[in-house]
Amino acid sequence: MTVVAQMGTLLRRMRVAFLVMLLVGVGCVGSCAGDSVAGPYCGVFEQDDVTSIVGRVESVEDERSSVMGCRIHGERGILVAISTTDSWVGFGQGGNNAFTTLETITGGEGREIPGTGARVFSYLDASRQYPDAYAYWLEGRAGFTMYTVVAEDADETTVAALEELVIKYAPQVLDGVASRTEDPGPNWNDPATSAPSGEPSAVQTADSSNEAESTSTGSPGR
Image (tube, rainbow, N blue to C red):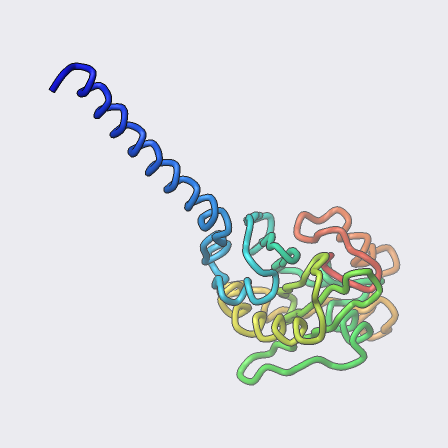
């Protein structure tokens, strides 16, 4: 075989190899880029639980400023999970403890969880363009919440799903937290349990607490 023929054969082989590499790369872009970030998220939440609410997971922020602080960014919204050892500070409003605050918001006494001292509250805040769904587990003075942020399709079905998720995960997230058996905190306007007049309200205290995110009207823990 002449040198020219050998060169031609080599070039053809190089072209074939290049095309194969190109096709493999294109194939990965078409399928791999759409893959969800694999769970479990923040060491706890299963992938199927999360993607059913916010779709494909794009990124996760694990913030351990409290017992748990987790933000899961999905293609249809954000799912936040926060726990606290002091729900009076983290979730209470107007100087009331978290139980009284959520009873006022939801108009009920919550769902009792057999075998525990916990109650679960859930609701849909439809005051925004994209309603946010909330669910809270309150046990003693400890608390755990999961809620959506700017979720495009959050509705009462989302609320029900979040309620089941907090029931599923709260015992694990709050395992070993001593405040689960402590008093839930005072109610500002209740003479029997009211805080001293010089003591700041839960909302005022929450502003300086690393355990609570900024709170929006009517929605504790935000």
